[in-house]
Length: 321
Image (cartoon, rainbow, N blue to C red; front, side):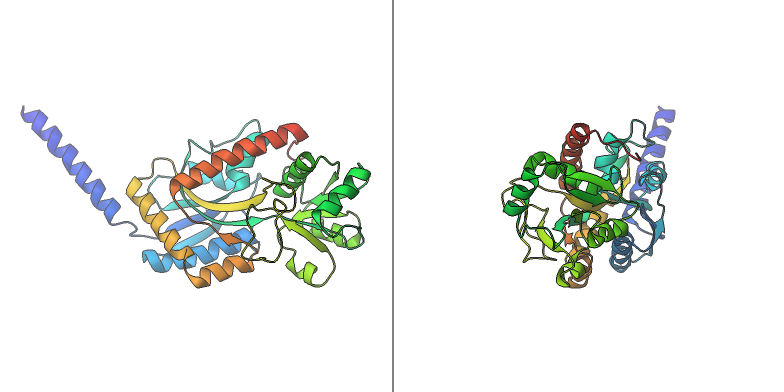
């Protein structure tokens, strides 16, 4: 009986200490791992989120860039980190929903190794064409493409990228044959369109080129119009119902992170996303704030995993080739 009482006392003490530690969260700086290189949209989004979260949480949130291996390097690091809320991942659709169908072997499991915290933002792809192309809307473009199968090309930053898959999905849903031309970076893919090497592209940073008349935007690849480009109609409303290709970003934590810590982070991110300064920053990156519950984020990961798996299989996409 004595040993039983001692055991119960130790167990209760441990639970009380653990609860105290969690309620005291955060009591030291938090690391937010960004799976993309410095200077890009994902990095900018990570840094503005970290800055705003620091103010809400009362502790520094430090961004650490860990690009490489198709975003898997940084993801692997966070997957194996202590589940204490002090190491978080700014993941993308590539990290959690596309890679599982591109790679036969991965160093992390997108579902089992992470706990969803909150979606942050999404940047819909924009279908744009060369002004020399005789098509001013989606209907005219599809008619032109169907009359000339295999004649026209679209650019992307490389095999397996979201822009590549956006084109593959477009080919499938519109029943057209546009040839994929992979480049090595988003900027190069856009230059390919501007120079006339390709006639179409699916990108999300095209506003300056559209306003200057250097390219012609056809439609945006979200189900609803974007707050960052509200005058541009969606492809869905122009005759491709259900067409959606967005690059989303969201925060996840290592699996096993305490529920109360996840809730505090979710509440804090949703609070930050309601600030006008944050909304304006996301709009400047051609994106829309998302937010929402952990369940919503988890469902989005699963549904996009299924969608892109079908597209990748149908198009025979192999990463890096």
